[in-house]
Amino acid sequence: NAGVTQTPKFQVLKTGQSMTLQCAQDMNHEYMSWYRQDPGMGLRLIHYSVGAGITDQGEVPNGYNVSRSTTEDFPLRLLSAAPSQTSVYFCASSRAGTQYTDTQYFGPGTRLTVL
Amino acid sequence: GENVEQHPSTLSVQEGDSAVIKCTYSDSASNYFPWYKQELGKGPQLIIDIRSNVGEKKDQRIAVTLNKTAKHFSLHITETQPEDSAVYFCAASIGNNAGNMLTFGGGTRLMVKP
Image (cartoon, rainbow over all chains, first blue to last red; front, side, top):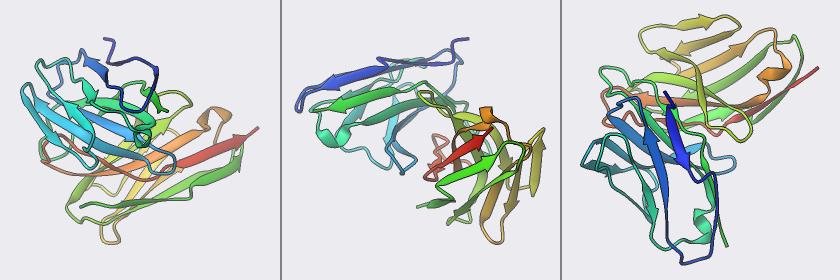
């Protein structure tokens, strides 16, 4: 199993450009999430999905769109990049939780710089 | 919503010493508390987790304790080694939440000096 994979590893954008960060998992997990990591702030949830065709907003959704057409893929779209979106982005996946949250597995991250 | 605070933000220890990182949470409904280790340029990796039905869990040199009354939990690393140097994150989650959403602490940079 490759686990959770993300592409690209690094990206530089100019303000106003658009791009898509790719995320894929091969563990047949129902849940997938996108987090951003900023210095001193831990990881903050952007969007999440509980299955194909179902997405919802997290703590910091503004400026980002997501879709989930298959179980395996969960792309994150920046429609008009802003310097405030300079960050490291992590995708995560997990099985559906029960009484307790199930373990989340993280990808290696995409480091995005917006000039 | 849930708020998780983590202390200290940096911790420097001598090889072989113990390291303790503490977290507090605000929502009494949280019942799952994972700890992640993040090495430079990599994604967070789960090292240990604890559920609210137990007070302590141990895995070799790593242990986590949970005090539900005080709403705090701690990571203990004994006999530290240079390869333990990394950033550690605590997190909290409410069970049965759609998406298995985690709220993270701000992270602790642990440096183990040989």
